Image (cartoon, rainbow, N blue to C red; front, side, top):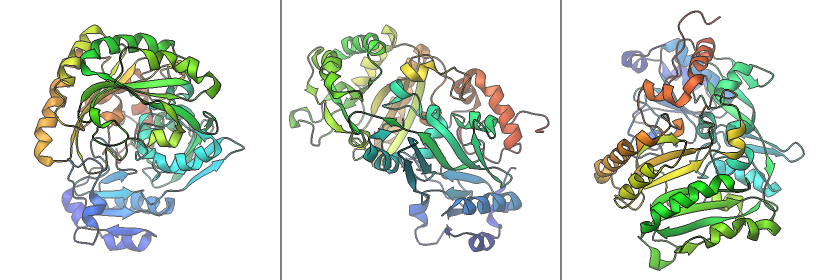
Length: 472
């Protein structure tokens, strides 16, 4: 189903207004500019209408309306999409942000989260019971987008990716029907949802397995910073150390500028550093032994490891990265951190263009790497890292500067990569990049797409095009 601007402009949105419990917001209505804004301030889209859905029935009504009136669909969960795909010019935006319930079953060790939840909502529900489910690194990130892309986070080494802990999902399909996908129901769809993005329908709720972490939800974590001149030594040490660590301890490595805010020491404000943010979720009586090598290596400028609720670490960087900043993303997977890559990191770390711009590498090993590459749609299970380069700044006048730095950095680093990238970190980069990011799983994904969305209704995403032929 391919929409035309004319078809969208003349669609009888009054009909949809009557069918919704939620609100339908159109150009000129109060709140339109706020409703169309996404996390990435570099994105400026003007949808034909934004449906603020209040339940799954509203989502069904939107999908059926779009089908009947040849309207294009964009789907917004938390709005964090790197490429800003939660809004689109002239589209009907299915906005799930009002669906925010998160319900824990302590006895079953599960949590059911609506698709408008952020990870702050889920952590609030689970950490109170000393539990968590693997998620990402910012509490403001939406549950839906992160999950559907795979879900790499602090707990991945110990408990796998977010999709490895997904038990079921309620999905509105392109024909307007609602199904539950799990290992026992629509298992092919369930396989595809675990990393295949928003290609197969609108997920309205997720059920996840939870795990006991730390002591009553209290972990030991925080940053360790080193001088930027130590980049090569720290990266070589980190690449050898991390795979040998107990899986209760994980750490992601970054090139960054120390933020000019507490609790960072004022003497370090504005200083470019190489840092590692650690998270230990094991028994506290073993913490000193496990953390000893990461506390004592080299000559750190700051050792910020301390006990805290997991939700505090998960949200630690949210205030530094509020919605509306300018973002330009480039990303790759890496099987190793080679000496050639380290030279590139050192070069562009010295050129960090703004205080918010940064490079992160997140480990995908331990439990996440023990899942077969074809067990879920997420294919990169080699025990390496997901790398991301982001040029970030509040000022639109700096958009070109941060974009060029990220592009140049990526161009030099990409030859050291494994090829594809984590789709949650990708801009609009074309079909070849999408295919590379799914490796050998791409063809199977096209078959599932043909079965559940043969007309490619859901294509405002990192798109998987349906295989040709019958969808029967």
